[in-house]
Amino acid sequence: MTQTGNEYAQALFALACEKDLRAEYAHGMALADGILSGEDEYLAFLACPGIQKSERTAALTEAFGGALPEDVLSLLCLLCEHGKIRTFHECAEEYERLYRESERTCVAQVVSAFPLSEQQQELLRRKLSALSCKTVTLSCTVDTALIGGLTVTLDGRIMDGSLRSRLQDMKDVIHR
Image 1 (cartoon, rainbow, N blue to C red):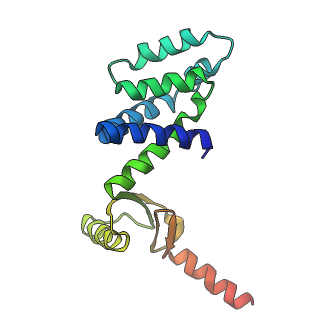
Image 2: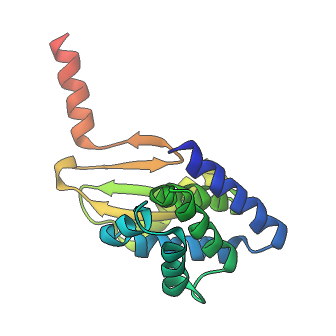
Image 3: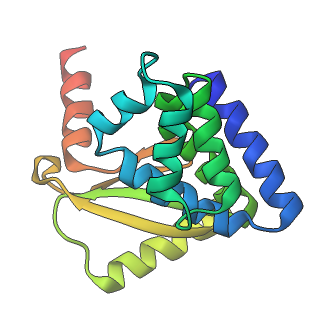
């Protein structure tokens, strides 16, 4: 994460708090990030110093005007004007982190060897919520290479309860 991305996100978040529009700005940032992250040519155009700033910011206004909160669009234009548009993804990630922190929510990345049932997911969500003192949403994926068990990444911590990890630990002990 760049310092620039952090600073712009923190400034936007402070403004959102002041205007009581944290959720609206979070939605706008996620929308813009989702669109821009798949458009390498458009980002190259927005970052090109050979194209006048006014033309680049007009393209942003035309593309996003009315779809984003005014301050989110202003942030995009500001990043474009200062040649920092490529840091927008980092800005959006930091804003999302700040927003989730303010709402006491988080997303746990769960990787399991087999798909988890709805009942298993709910039980895991409850346990993780109790552990973190936050409302937890699960993002579940399957990786058969784990053999059994699961790994959970929550607030930067990794909890590895996979059979693959346990077998590796046993192997390490044997080789000592």
